[in-house]
Image: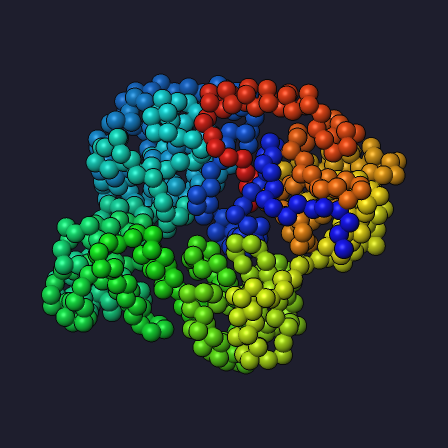
Amino acid sequence: MLSKRVQTGPAAPTRPAKMRTPTLVLTGLLLLLLASGRADDKHGETESATEKSPRDAREEVEEAPKNEKGSEIREDNNVMVLHGNNFARALNQTAFLLVEFYAPWCGHCKQLEPVFAEAADKLKKDGPGVALAKVDATDEKELAEEFAVSSFPVLKLFVHGDRKNPIDFTGKRTVTGIIQWMKRRSGPGATVLANASSAASFVDAHNITVVGFFKSLESDAAKEFSEVVMDITDTEFAITTSPEVFQEYELKSDTVVLFKKFDNGRVDYALPDDSKLDKSNLTNFIQENSLDLIIPFTKETGDKIFSSSIRLHCLLFINSTVESHTALVDQVRTVAKAYKGKMLFITIDLSGDVSFVLEFFGVSAADVPTARIISMDTGKKFKLDTADLSADLPPFCQKVLDGTAKPYYRSQDVPEDWNKEPVKVLVGKNFESVALDPAKNVFVEFYAPWCGHCKDLAPIWDQLGQKYAGHDDIIIAKMDSTANELEAVTINGFPTLKYFPAGGKEAVEYSGNRDLETLSKFLDNGGVLPKEDDDEDDDDEAKEGESLETAANTTSDKDEL
């Protein structure tokens, strides 16, 4: 029984910067991919000016050497350096120009810089007409305002000199991702299939192909299809209006067909009676059917797995060097087929570098072969304990789908010296007995070892522990939330600070400044920030907002992976 009321809903927003992710599960698995060489793929991530103080940001900009800015265009590692005086010239002389709006102090911008330069070099070698450029948005404020740059980095494509309608970059921030996206945008898009012979050759040439069969290329559905072609750059597309090709593939109405050299070989996406094509539905159709029934977890498949609309994932932990394990995967294929569209089936191969995944799911080499199911929406994990995986997997999957399976939560063993230091060490196994003790007021930091903000807080948290070490009714504690999980406590970011009051009162999430003085006032005031601190924070926020507007226009605070 829990002796204190614990919030189980989403945590309240906090003022200090915090690492936030859709789920902590996703963070953990992405770390594996980053460790496998994908650190340059920060797709969609931007950095706010609060990563560096507004004053530091302005000083850095002010101290930077100023070059005379004429209309000429210089290059930095094959990337055009643009500003207000040469921006129009660059647009007029380059048919397809991808521009990065960056801040010199931005961590994500620094990570993107060598990737962007390498992509620029390779595109330049392919010939004129396609190029990459960059704008220091902290210095070129008018350009940043014109193109509504609200975070860093922002990438926008300008086509044939049109500065009124730039296209937001939607590809992967890798060398290959940038090149694929630019070639797709600057090229013809879908290949036009004029006859049955060209169609057969196209389908045979690729592992996966998507062909749009339309009566007219001017139809709304064909135009929507062409937009999907531009967004999915790692798949080969074709389009046809040829009656001969329609007949060859036994089609009578507008249809999109995905051909693949595995599974059943072909999947049709039939348009509804009104012939309207929904781009989102078609994108999901292509993504889901491009995956094998059982998907090996690699850096190549990771993006498609994480972006899938299917949020239940069944992980099969195997060792591909063991013949019985590979045979088991073949047996599970029938299960995967039965649950297609409801659950993804993914193999985690111990012969590869998957130690982080094993740790994350609490699986040892001795446990293999085994299975785990995870909900990417809730982060809940389900464990299958059985000696006969092929027989027990189907009912296990069904229980998870029905909502009758009980999730499991990881915990480290309780350290022998957990109570030795002023800051007590909590794990899943001792959390309730310590944090939910009705006679104690317990202030807990939920942290991740790799979190930069957590590292910054560590010495302050130690000082807080020392300050209250002599208080019998106050405990300062910490818990590694990457290795310990709690059913009744929701952690939406790192670090999260929660105060568990004595007497069974509801837990409070701390939302003040993370300095020793403010933290102490919070504790001395019984888990409530004094009103004057709230007012001061509001004033600070207003001042910071003015600085941010001047320095950079930003949207979110993130710690880097």
